[in-house]
Image 1 (cartoon, rainbow, N blue to C red):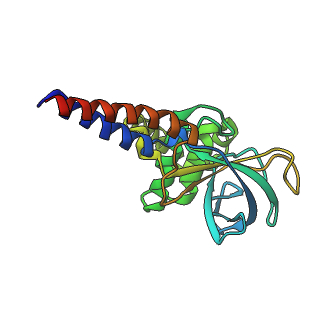
Image 2 (image 1 turned 60 degrees about the vertical axis):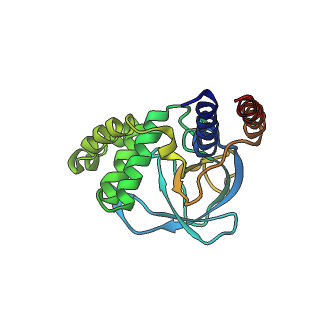
Length: 218
């Protein structure tokens, strides 16, 4: 294979990575209205799903990852919506824990993990207090965490492009303290930041020019 073809392959690969990388997602501020829980509960608390209207949209089920925060039905607040691996979540840049949370969430969605045990497993990734709940001990949520962390570590970042973290903006809530953080799944992948598109796009244009030049010289 000649050098021009190798360059073209690199160009295509960069384009794919650019549009698939969720870690580059730009923040979007949304209005969260908590409609209420779906009815599942364990260990004295409600578990997935938590039903929302996001910026006036239709009912959207999300999963909570913040065990120590509280919300009530009808409460409203503003949240920053980011890609799962943006590093802008309530619990900082701990990407592996967020990846494990997404793996568990997907397992709940496809029915291989129960909502109660799965939600407690997600909570325990970020809160020691969740591990102290008797349901965490009896449900096998700890084993779910161990499996999810190991599995998530093997997956590429592109596997998490469809997950969104809704991080509460403190002081915007209509009740109580800082609300909970939630993770959602959407069919359209999170797109890169405009600045990143411009920067890498410029590089891709230059690379494309190199390809044309080398083909012309061949």
